[in-house]
Image (cartoon, rainbow, N blue to C red):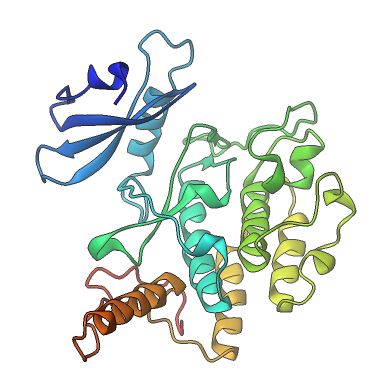
Length: 300
């Protein structure tokens, strides 16, 4: 452990967490392992400098207070699964929750502007079937709380977010709005389907039908819908969820919260039991958890 991280060990943060050691350090702050004083659980804590010109942590904390109350907001746990290669069933269950998370942010008059795979994480324990949306450092208020006035259309903006998942309008320097979050989500879903995206500088010349070739037409329909939205037009999230709901039912899947990684855990546990000569099926968790995230779509 580095000396810099050693100086943080034992430090109490906000009377809530006790730091254990530093996990990593970056330009915007340090990430540390800590123990919750109240619950005794391991948590991750981000530390930032008081002297920063633009204090990201203060901005994020204020935004979390605005967004709190929505499912999949604030209680963050980090896990990586299956090298991002998912079956269609898992992609569709994730799509349902992802659309709902983004919709909640939009209802609070903010856009996320950094929709990418790394910002969608799964919970652990009784929250393991729940998807979480994180990292609001680039989030922007697009509408006034009182007047409901939308921010003005502009064409002189620099690219914000990760270029691979950025929208066509964002690359063109157009101010981002609802449609950009949803269009970027479409690229995330196709990344989960394909494990890669087929462009560097050809995004504008790549029709949705080409990107989604070999996959159900609903993905191209989703992208074309998002790309066609007017700057101030709010996406019809119910329509988008129903689009994938119908596909889900057409493929005869069950919304049982059995993700790909659930099956991998079951298989690993069974192999471990077999190797130890127990001679019986291991008792492993299924996707069904006591604190399931209820789907927003009837019939799922």
